[in-house]
Image 1 (cartoon, helix red, strand yellow):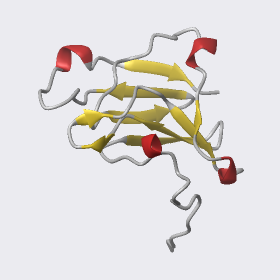
Image 2 (image 1 turned 180 degrees about the vertical axis):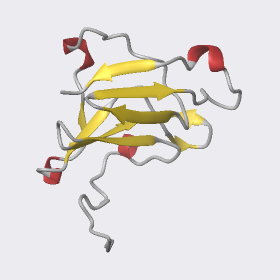
Image 3 (image 1 turned 120 degrees about the vertical axis):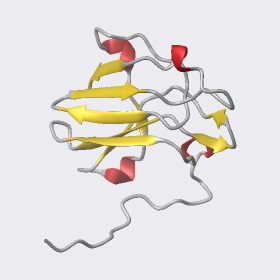
Image 4 (image 1 turned 60 degrees about the vertical axis):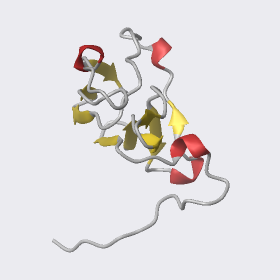
Length: 117
């Protein structure tokens, strides 16, 4: 197998600050041919937000778009978190863990299940 790098969406001065982040989680869902982004920080130990974003790999120029979780049956949104774990199994994303700042308050970092397709 041969790998090569390709820039799908360049970071520019027009990139919104809330999308510039580290300590985030990204997973791929084949059914939607999309990447999903959750959590992270852009200032040390300050969570960015609790929004789930998607990036269509069919048309990455559309950029990261917030996912409308209210349309799903499991619309309970978790608290914002830094360094969560996330995995995709079929059309479901599983998010667990992370921290909410300096302290690791695991009581708020419970599991989240969202249907993507």
